[in-house]
Length: 280
DNA sequence: AAGAGGGCCAACCGCGACAAG
DNA sequence: CCTTGTCGCGGTTGGCCCTCT
Figure 1 (cartoon, helix red, strand yellow):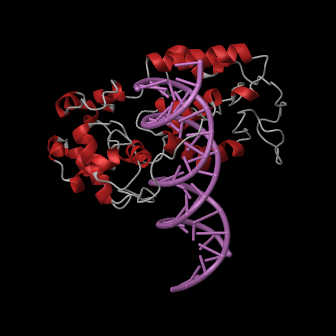
Figure 2 (cartoon, rainbow, N blue to C red):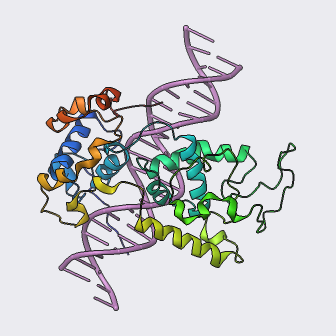
Figure 3 (cartoon, chains in turn green, cyan, blue):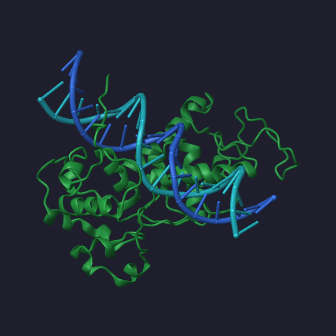
């Protein structure tokens, strides 16, 4: 179906967000909640398209975001999840509280991919690479054709009750040798049903008990109430303010809402720049 | 000390899914 | 059931920053 551009190209600002724009967006969302992104820029007084506002909020301004590098355990979890879900970054991100799909995607492309290749693992199929130029510790070099190098028992995520919680086992240094390929179309037909079942049950778990804290999603959004949003009801659901929100430049926003925050958390916050923080 | 090259990350783009009319 | 509009997702890119020479 033919689609219109998400916003008028004329008069719409692009590029890095300024602190002022961040302030406007945060102020607006904290006051009104998330509703109808298309209307947000107009109502918030921003010369951005709604999409850009949503992206900025979800990837950067959301208070429950963790910042900084993924921990080893998180990395391991991403690898495991990627082996099951493929490039479904949003699903993977849903298993890592405080992490965004964009963040995980970037981390995958810049770090994990190389790491896996270095370890002799195909980052796409999660199977041993065909041939290592130098002799490798895993010299069996099993062909990638539906090889099942390890039993599923060794995969921590085969245990449904695990529910994505990072365990010490998961953060072990051994690579996840998972037979299922990353994408549905490359999945071997032999394991297809089994893998599909596992995948579906896994995704189902996610539906039932996502570990990501969704409480920052305001009721107005959950109910799709476009206009009946109220600060009071929103505040009732603001439990997310009490946890992880590094890199959120409250001091610059000067919002009274933040007055009651734990000062220890405030101490951790970095001064904002055009990108609020730059954790390079 | 300066330039080149690469790494990293925030943001954009386009498409598919879904809901409303 | 079809059309239209919005949202969300994944892929890609632009540009800043760091490291190497």
